[in-house]
Amino acid sequence: MTSPADPRDGAAPPADPGLKLLAVTACPTGIAHTYMAAEKLTQAAQARGIAMKVETQGSIGAENVLSDNDVSAASGVIVAADKDVDLSRFGGKRVLCVGVAEGISDPDGLIDRVREAPVHPGGAASAPAGEAHSGAGTGDGSGAGSGGGSGTAATGPAGAKGRERSAGYKALMNGVSYMIPFVVVGGLLIAVSLALGGHPQADGGLVIPDGSFWKHVNDIGVIGFTLMVPILSGYIAYAIGDRPALVPGMIGGWIANTGELYDSESGAGFIGAIVTGFLAGYLVRWIKRIPVSRFVRPIMPIIVIPIVATSALGLFFIYVIGRPISWVFENLTDFLGGMTGTSAALLGVVLGLMIAFDMGGPVNKTAFLFGAGLVSKSPEVMGMCAAAIPVPPLGQGLATLLRRRFYSDQERETGLAALFMGFFGITEGAIPFAAARPATVIPANMLGGAVAGGIAGLASVGDNVPHGGPIVAVLGAVDGVAMFFAALLIGAAVTAATTVGLVTLGARRSGQDTPGTDSAEGAVRAPAAVGAGVRAVDGSGDTARGTAAARSTAA
Image (cartoon, rainbow, N blue to C red; front, side, top):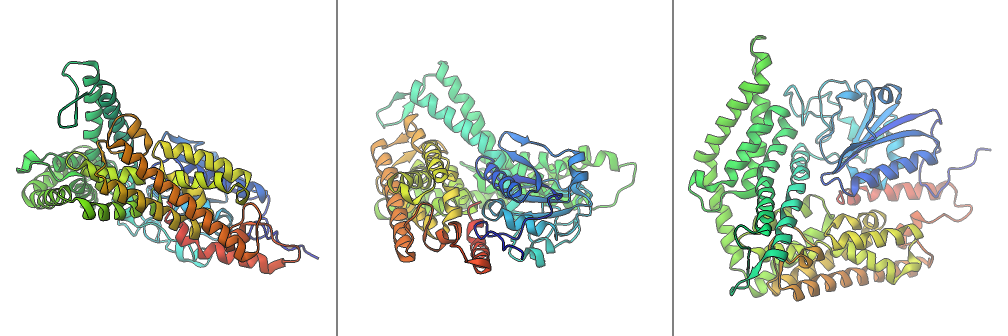
């Protein structure tokens, strides 16, 4: 008699031990999700006797790179990414493309589904957009829906629950991923120079004497901070139109950020850069489709396309859309700058909810970019974001200390790491907890983020650099340090208390009071009772699939 599958893993019976799989994991920031997905996929494969090699495309570049021999010997490839990944090397192999969060939340399901995934046709293509293997970063300028038309990668029988990111989302996240190092380096150098070389002024600000050592450090930081906008635009364009779109995208972003070119005081900022990035990318893709003589074709990507696209985009932005975008941005800045009292607190609540909702995902990035774009004229807006940014990891880490018996040893270790990441303003430290207990952790994070943002807004806390967490206050970039720490500590305490309360309530309702359990979610992750049989397996599988959409927001 065949033994039933182990209900603890919630997966199908182990696959053929001779199966060889590859995986690529990547997220926009390349800090947390990339490596968590790689670890989960590796552990799932090892538990089932499957050989798997995982390439991580993190913030320090590609590691454990897949070789041609690896690809030729592989039975299938799992691409768990929220940014562009080159698929051309996987021609002739079954390729399953999903969001990076699904690699964290359902690695066993991905291993099952990749064996029925469509075969990639080969040729220049990037990771899919929408629900197909599209060419979001194609080298030949093919349409977004091309690249094989394998829409069943996400919607076919083997992948009914898969949901691929749209082309626009992937392009935006590609730009954000390349922009973040410039934001961090530029912002922190400015903060260090102000903290160590700045002299207080009567108006409460800091000034660094010209010609001093710290003035030079500040200037370097300003360069990094200035470059972030064209970098954002350039790599959005690159994700859509490939290498020929990089120059028009970056120059377009510089134009968008330089208001003097179209009689604007502040420029269009990151909003204008996003517009120029998409315009440059799609303009280049359109030019690529124009049939030309084979004698002209070699110089198209290095001379013709960059010059034509850059000139057309630059002039179009200056004469047509630059001023309207700048007008909206300036009026929004003036409106936010005049918000005080209750209205500022309400804005802080909204930004705190957004920051804490998906912890590095698109909603989080929207709020962060909003605050970063206003940091020079309305640092109070960035102060609201900066107070909310560390709340999820600090709150979840604190919860593991307050209620240790409800967490496994591994989760308690992750809690300590989350506390460390929270200090440096890395919201992604809370992702492992959200993936395991989405119905408990996400609301708790949002409640704490809203409290922190609201208090910071009410107290007019200012952050002069586009970064968050206690580190920016330690480095002297925060105005109103006492209220800043009060906001983030109260927010973290609210998140921790809410998490502990929900975990405890869930354990009592389900009659479970053992480590690592959390209501229905804990029942899925805890070992099933003897004799649970197939019903336990099916139940856990259904629960995993039912929460996949919620977990995907944690990307």
